[in-house]
Length: 392
Image 1 (cartoon, one colour):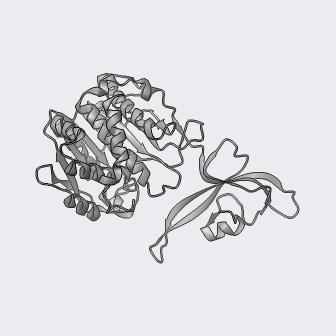
Image 2: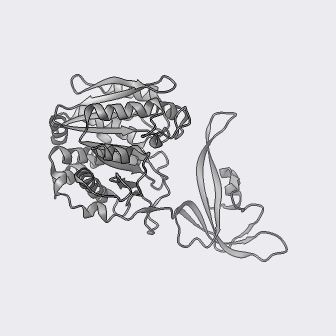
């Protein structure tokens, strides 16, 4: 068994020892992140500086550690509402601060020069929104470089010329692995650098690292790993950083049943990133067959949060009822009056949903639903939903 997998198993099984316990929610801002980083910063392990400032003047931290010849750049929360890897990076640094003699810690700090931008879009994080304060999707700003945050990332890459990069994101938690109905907990991509999706030594190295990450994930979530869409996006950072010569792997944190706060997916990121960096440090990534990545199914959307199975729907008194399934997703909405984050259910499909999976299937056993309750795009509070789905 490859050592990277052995160490990943160990890291995964002992995660609670090194989990940074102050992180209890995926909603946090720059001030909290800086406080956490200062709390775990031991002398001599890593340095923290200000890479630059956001459009609204928030500082963007850069963490540097390791003394090795191979430079690796990791950046997270380019989209402000995608914080899973940011949490895992804090766990990652907490592990290194407490286990400096561990073989993984020694390998990554002695063989690698690691650059971490844990929150590239602090203005978006403050609002828990995808875009920057200037309403720009930063991941479509790699060419125009209109935003200060995008310019900082480009300048950082150009200054250090990293050999490897990890582009850390969150995807829709309802993506599935192909048409399996299994949720995609992690999606991976070695981005294309041209329309032809060509391979060169840069992209092939990225594919080998992605194969390592995929192999690690299959240890913990077999069948729940997919490949992200590999179409070339000429404005995206991952595609361009690959084109500029850094072997880049996109890691998309997806969903898991009962894990709305993404704490289990955070754990997967923690073990996957540490063990993948170990594989880079020891150059064992070159021995990982590309098939572990190439044969991953692409992610698709065949999942709802809830599916009411086998109901009967009568839309009006003068029409007969029909047999239906009802697909419902539950998202979060900020109450404009109280500021509280509240769950809101939306009815997204009605009919034969047999090809779709769900985080929760609710057998309706022919129960009659009324059109005034069940209609397309209706938004409901959870009490309203429970009024006609008592089993919820």
